[in-house]
Length: 497
Image 1 (cartoon, rainbow, N blue to C red):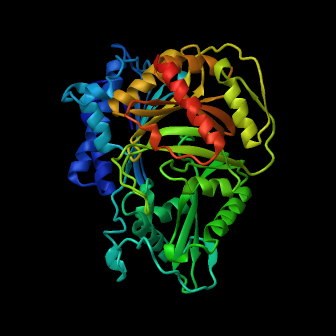
Image 2: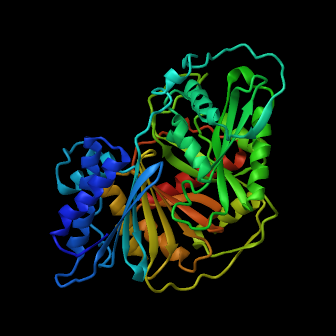
Image 3: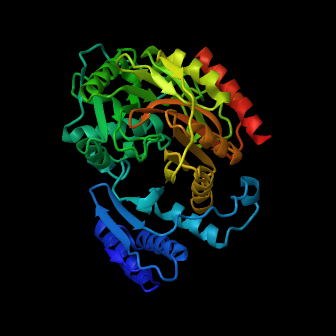
């Protein structure tokens, strides 16, 4: 639907959003939040529009079995950087009743994913994604007479038997996978999708997830492992070259039977069939087990993501319970074929650690001389409510990169309330060094290397962490991971100074 840049367009946009929300099955409270979110988005465009503007706004609604997506495109001036966001210490003391606070609550309450996109001469885009209501595994427990109690920490091993590893495709598979995850993790697994059988089915049908299961002799699902396509770090990229391995779980009664290895082998074969360049994993640093799994499958540490996950994870057989804090993760990468040599153009002060990381990962790389940047920057800025963090993807570095990054950071911090952000910039971009310098002035510091993350291009990953973090809790297995942690912490202190 096209709308004129006039105040009279506000109720029309709100009505359009409300009717789609009702069609999607949202209740009245969530429908109202969606209407307000779209109304605020249109109002933001009108604030930027020139008094004599005649450029129409395009409001697009898309309804799928999984989501309602509302996209607002305009060709007005891009958002200008607002005042810098207040620190977490200030926010903790202030009753947020100003406009920024209302917008922040609007985004948090309504959108599962919020994306602000600057598209250069093509204008600006606000994209809001709302997961449609559906029954999770607990709500659907009446479909199965077996209990949903958690697995016992010490459980007897199942009898020796023959197992099958296959693609998950049968109707009953999805309920069994969700049930398996719930019994292993409760509600603490960072991937919400695993708790919704219908969502798992649709994600696999749409090709965004490739699930593999292990079944026992009775054809009961006792293990799950998946490839996630288009996950964090690749948001906005149109051509995916890598996939994330994750969502791995095995019934404790069936551990020690090489089920994880067999499922992983199957996933790697499927990834090669799709022509992917590599696989990455993001194991937590609370305990070493998931890191050892990545090491065992031949992956190498490339990056450290501080405060990556919300602080509600609980792992079985932990030695002690400690107050929750956001969970940090490592990024491991494994090429699926001999990688070609890279020509990279990083800032001088990060060259040594990047070359070390390339060597550690078995990827040849050589340094080039950066050039200048011109024109308008292009970027995507996403807020992900499930992880409560923001991601900025610099698609192109222009001479306005400092202003563009400040605007993107402030959209995520002020309007979505994110206190943890990740920024990626292509290492082949001649403006990479300029982008890093601009980001460091905004509080971003080194995160690491992410090979093939942006349409096959390697990216430098920076991070912005405005939350308390005790790094003494970080447990690392690989010597290079400890080297990376030391470097990240030194760079954080340098940027803060």
